[in-house]
Image (cartoon, rainbow, N blue to C red):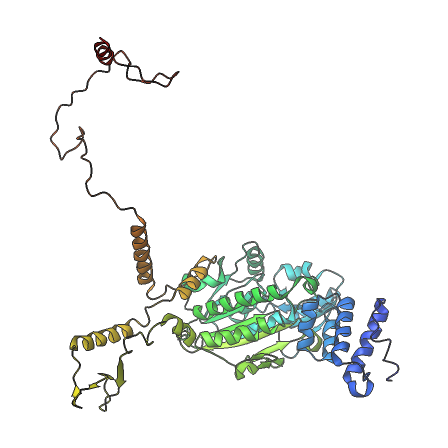
Length: 552
């Protein structure tokens, strides 16, 4: 075997697709047992580089996305994942229990020649359609609203949300309305559902599906989800199907293979973090049997799933709870350079090669307090810059604790006298001033803002649709900056002369008494004006007489 894999595997010249596929198989078998089957002169990295290039050419992925999948899956599972993305998922439909039963719907479709089966034991409303002589979206049952064409993975977040009758629920990113109609179905058309989506064009399909399915407890809105807590709140449960990179639905959209790169993943992750905080803020922790948020994406990337949920755990008073789903792979709590909260095992991952459905991620959060926790210590250090330093109020003093358990006393350093006796500090006013400064610094600890924090606040405020809470001490910071700029402009102004020339009185001046001003008529002879041709002033008649007298 060693001779067999020495030359043909690592050859560099281009091959056909069949030869590339064969080399992928050979390299995977070698990497499964590198000590026995590998070439001792070759390293594992060389085999991995060849495998990566071959997988990129055979399955048409870009290098960034394929490296992410290689890091996530073992080699045997990686090939199965890539193969499953090349095969389309089976068509699944969901029975509308508001209008019919699954048994009656299945019987009606079988009579039309549709070949179908129940979706699985985990759902009572799902059906898998294998073959149909007529389009599934054009049957009389579909037009009557007896079922909805919906992916099997889209059932899962609604099942995890577990809505109850009479509750007030928000679907933050609702289009095209499959999950919304399922929520209304479980609530038996009671309570109130707020259906929101940022894309106005996609809301048309939501409204159409709501009318067709007979849903009557919904309110449709068109807002950016990040600004929703300022518009409306006090929801019992919130469902957030966040916009993502779509790495779990490559079978539906093959353009994801080449379009997505690192910037796209980072942009999606940033938006998802803002959306999940808005979803948590929209939920009411004091709601009876409520206070739940379900976060889901159709992506398999850790940056869009576990990292976003872990961010929410740090920024808000929430905890992860059981999703209530019977199957699925546990979420990562340790992944390469990431270390997440141990409760991340409660989240669920779904893969196309193991569950025969689109790649999906579901996490269920429970909000236990409506208060927003204080920022991290790093943010506090930025805002408290300069307090407690050597130049601060305690630079020349020592803090000693009182034995009675009261507030700490500020004791000044005592200097020994020449005679050896301890001398009382000369100026008591300095000690009192220091006490006042320390008290004011403690009281203003939360109001001081650093320039770095102010710039971050201004950047966040410029984002479209962003709702930013005002910073404490912002107005004071602005006043200090304006005062500094005013002083700077005053110093730059030129010094004005002490004696100002007297201003002539004008007829409209109220301070000086108005006197009739005698205006002399202009002389007809324009002797004073310059001659335009020669540029010289014409001499007056008096000056001419004087010159004649001097000559005589």
